[in-house]
Length: 219
Image (cartoon, rainbow, N blue to C red; front, side, top):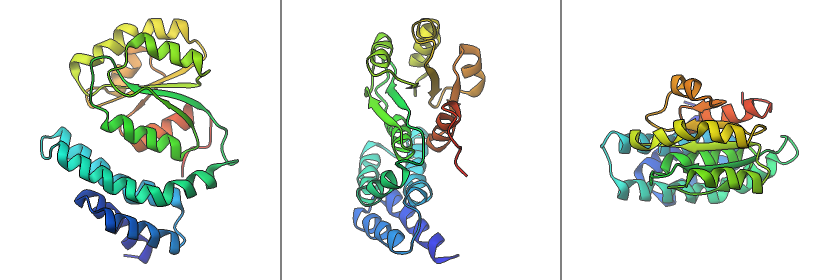
């Protein structure tokens, strides 16, 4: 394992363990080692949070563990995100994104990870939070002249709102691309409901966002 791989692995484990001190020190080590800050976030910090998200969805961990892991994640992001944002400026065409968890859904861990990935990719983000009324998505997209609307649902009982409201969204926002995601949603459902894109996880969602905006996809 190379020094860079070792540092990234240390960052991942620090997030999984909820260790803010190690997450910060490993992030500083990544900067000192010349690791690209975006790579450090995507390959170091994020996999730890994605793993905790998987465990949570599988009932293998609970909200307190998620909160502690998120604190470790943000301890690393405090160091890396300003550098990643600075390096992205001028290198990508900007896009305006409206994002939120759909009406009735109070789960926002996955949505927050997607938001983070999009921020790192240089998008302007307008986060509506969770349990967002479907009409508000349209209103906020119009207010902010959005290029991309991202909606998430973690429950089978709430994903129906996306299906039912998609025709109205498409009619009101003909120039806005729509991407959906969440545990019960699949590429098949995205195709059936008329979404423009689907993200299986936060990293894939960011790649899809760049594809939809016709921005150079990540390596």
